[in-house]
Image (cartoon, rainbow, N blue to C red; front, top):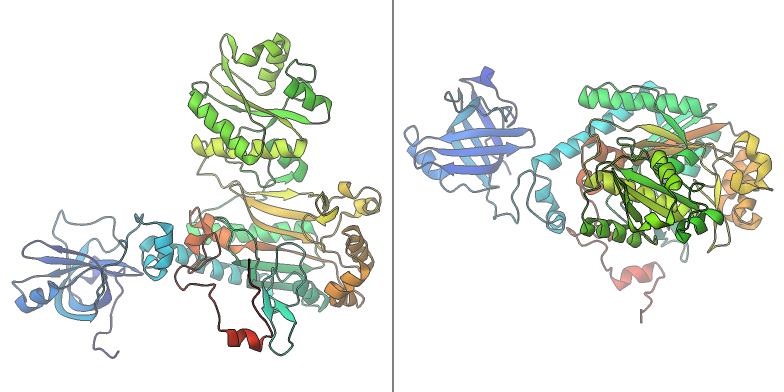
Length: 591
């Protein structure tokens, strides 16, 4: 549409320095207030809000036209900037010291009443917000989120470019090499019965770029995984992908810590200390029940297995005598919890799959619990000492297999911290988790599977254990954790064919299968592959934390629901049978 109004300023730009200037603004009507004389319009664009005044004494005809304005009408106005009357300044707006007296108005497009208000902290269901995402994205908080995302993109590109990295695009249509989540498959029309896969990550390609001598590569890339979703997962997601040659773990840590410093300095003018703390995987599980521990509060898991080995409470002593684990948490000052609240916490762990949690109130006279009769005074004193229990505390104890019990206690720890507001919101909780196991045994599959991915290098000193005790082999892998969430992960890669073949054999990937899936990578290793390693940021999760959001959907322009649906455009959708015929496909009827 060709119209005569071309803006001179945005709606977040004007200040008292512009007083008496003639201006032209365009945007959406955010709010209309008719005081019986003056009509006030809050005009909104993505830069801010400017108050427009229609005065019937100055222009009766224009004032009459303004009466038809409604929320979300798209308008253009001309006018003169003036200072707001004393006592009418709005300190919450960047333009709050001025207003624009309208001298012209053109309605560029009318709007129906939207299904929800275009305001921060909107009272609307997420389903409604996703159905009308183009309206949801007009809300200032959503636009701020996308601005954080944009700035993070730019900071990343500038930072890695300044450190000698080159940005290289890798294919979006690749060979299916499933070793993790399910692939999204794309049928080929030219080669019926054959399929491309959308990349779960550019892992193999970036290793090949190192073989190609690119030395330092990065890419902001879309990845795809067909897996169960939750608030911090999407079927399509973005990574900052990084790979380097002739480096070790310390080089990567230094590079990434510098990037995080740059992010916080440029985004928030905040200096963060380096180096970040480091914690080995086994310590993280033992102390926090998680390989992504939240360090912004205490309440660590304590081990009382030896103390209760000979107690008369069979649940505890039985676990202790059969190689299990008995441990617990101390929720300080919570002995006043009601029976209802304690039952809710027990139900929480039952829903996780645990058999329950023993809850003991500590009072000045001793334990307030029906279990007192099963413990000697010495055992109770030792438990109190180990958990640093004082009068008024609530002990929560669990028993069972080592791995599972720590996991349950870790989930309980996080829930209690949220419920009791124990989290220090001024902390970042940044740390590296290192020394992951290389593999773990999968009982249903009856084989070892890679904890990271099959191209992760074992520690040099553990290579002899690959054939004798693979469960003891540690990987040269590392994760970066922030506020209890993994925001990046990577490893030093295998770069020798012989070692890669050993790992494939351990993972029960037969030689012919390995050749079929990864033959081109193995072949590349024969032509002088350098030592290399890298890392990938979960970009959406990183931006979610930087923007202070609780869901990745709030920092993605057009996300999917937790069931992988796009409510706005109806994807996934049915296609014409003719399209399927072209691809040599037919739909299987479900009974």
